[in-house]
Image (cartoon, rainbow, N blue to C red; front, side):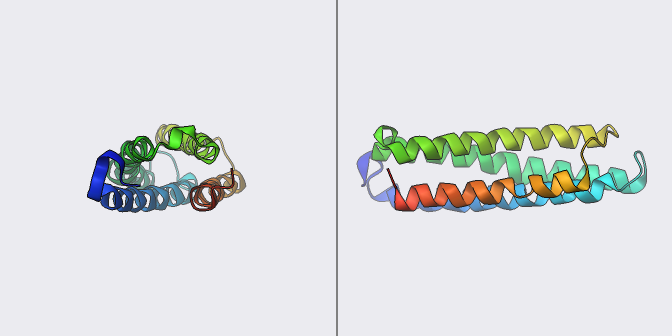
Length: 147
């Protein structure tokens, strides 16, 4: 399936997978950061250190990786004609949900930076499972293509 990308198709696909790995690594790390951050006293030096760590993770890894994943994924989808396939619709829905989860995490990081501690450690630990479950389903859809 070379399409308009020609011989570069496999390189674009490889880059897409690499940036998915970067994005998921950040998606696993940030909720864990939140668990530790919530245990700090708002305004303390440790609180400020966690705010800085979370901000760097979002700005250097998470958001750029997500953007590249979307760009390369859409290029690959157009190249292969995936928009006409059922498995791709399900995958796209899950990637949209993961992007929404990403947005929720950015919002929660901002709340923590303001000193708000709205969720329990248990809720954050459960939230930490979202990207793993979604990623497993996405990989199955992309590789097995069940429909």
